[in-house]
Image (cartoon, rainbow, N blue to C red; front, top):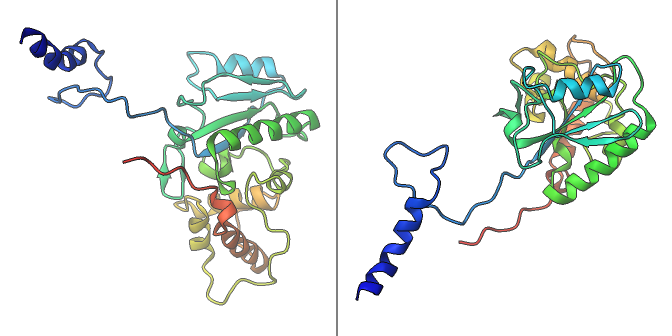
Amino acid sequence: MMLRGFVLLLPALLAACAPLPSGQGRGALWQPSPNFDQRRPNFVILHQTTNDNVERALATLTDPERRVSAHYLIGRDGTVMQLVDEAARAWHAGESRWGGMSDLNSASIGIELDNTGEEEFAEPQILALLALLDELRRRHAIPAANYLAHGDVAPTRKVDPSRRFPWRRLAAQGFGLWCDAPPATAPAGFDALLGLQALGYDVAVPAAARAAFRRHFLAQDAESELAPDEQALLHCLLQQKLRPQARGPAAPAALE
């Protein structure tokens, strides 16, 4: 009888001995479940360091006083350095928004490319990036539409990577959206600002959103209203986003 009582009490005793969670609700009883896993990132955010050499960039990204990091840093020679576990939240995007989502740090992998912002991106660096992106896609099933620039998710604060970044080349491998042959004009009544918002941009400051869009898809930095051909490109990208391959493979069904 005593043994049976001990067996019944064992789960409670184990729960009592287990470490308390860092985010425990006030007054909640800690009853740990094994049915969980670590976060699965759903975005990749690309950055440029604006440094002259990778050593300075690495020093910045690992300095506890600077409070900035990324999951990966890729040097001009193609050397890939991992700084943060992919399952952890790196401090790379800062205040950011995309498609109504805020805090992209919590849902993304950040990759820094060592580049001043005034130079072309080195070929070994881009080859290393493409290889890394392929690994990330296979590990995390990241949709094609979710490979973004820091400037895309923080258009009022950031302009990286620069207009020299080869987005078209990445999109050809399935890392990002692209539209090589947009129609001559967008449909009648097309609203460019709503189109930018539907693509994912935060349009609280329309000029910044327009500049970020042009930097990514047209290698330009202008903030003016979108011309008819640019609106047609935007509409074409929205159609691309709706395609199944842009949304990525379906996640495995949860067991209930």
